[in-house]
Amino acid sequence: MAEKRDYYEVLGLDKNASTDQIKDAYRKMALKWHPDRWVNGTDAEKKTAEEKFKEASEAYSVLSDPDKKAKYDQFGFAGVDGQAGPDFSGGFGNLNDILNDLFGGGFGGFGGFGNFGFGGSSSGRTGTRVPRGRDIRTRVRLTLEEINKGCEKEVTLTRNIVCPDCGGKGTKNASDVKTCPDCNGTGQVQRYANTLFGRTVTYTTCSRCGGEGKIVTNPCHTCSGSGLVRKQQTVKVKIPAGVENGMQLTVRGEGHAAPRGGINGDLLVVIEEIENPDIKREGNNLFYSKIISVTDAMLGTEISVPCLDGGYKVKIEPGTQSGTVLRLKGKGLPSVNGYGSGRGDMYVKILVWIPRKLSKSEKDMFQSIRQNPSFTPDLNRDDRNLFEKEKNIF
Image (tube, rainbow, N blue to C red):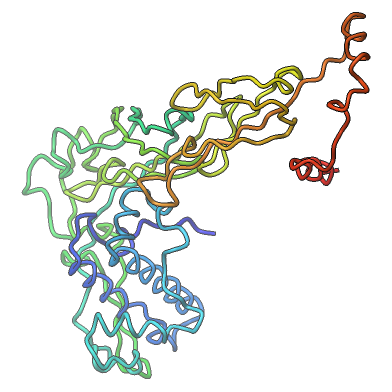
């Protein structure tokens, strides 16, 4: 399965795009790629149109929703996993509600495209493509203590930055940047075809200028005309509390730079959780096992549980059985930025250590009390469910 593209990249937008700009960008993509327009195309063209249309619709469904957009801006795809994208199960017709909002009331599907200028020759185009730098993916290793409180990490990267000699233009002299003769500065070339809908036009990226609309005739010697040089830099990344292993955070604009005033790529930070030898994690809950002696189990004691915010004293009642689980409410991990069910709990499982060897005096002592009623199992006690639960494991 192909890796998802950044939603802003799909719609050709900057991360600071306004609601109107997001809507306008999707309108153009919807007009261009709606499958009804490609009914007479080749199988490859139909498949491409369907994929592009779904991709654009998914991007719009996230970026047009303020809550989803905020989560996506902070956490990337992990923040909207399972929430992105309209329902296509009923076909493309069920997107008419979205399209009515974009194109005005009375929208009835794409049909013959006459209302949108596809019936004859088209003068519409998406314009010069804005170059965008590539994303950078890196990993950050965190302890449970760091995950509990959140932290700031420094990440060292080798990335493309704007050439200091030409300012990213690819040449020191502005006069050496010329309009591309193949696309006349549009960044795209046109192809016309006669279909049942009339004469239609498609646009492809200009191969000569790469969609930038400009070519450099006297390239900068430092960057060889690319407008970019590679440099090692350190970036500070703020990690929110509660992140999980494998989660990906998106730091906007900290990826590779783009030439000639383009949009920087993003830094994608993948979280790697360092395994704690004593504490195990499941979601926001933590699990810890404590071994106590048989005498402490019989007489009761006080133990210290290593919670993430420091040691926590817990009273063990007399007669505590091996396998008893104690719950420390609110001693687990927080939800990321408040999204979710809140802070988890710490569960402490008590295990009773039984000695394998006894001295003669110890054996004599236990023999003397062996027949006492206190040492005879009573399965009618209120904790018999614990025995049944343990028995069912086998």
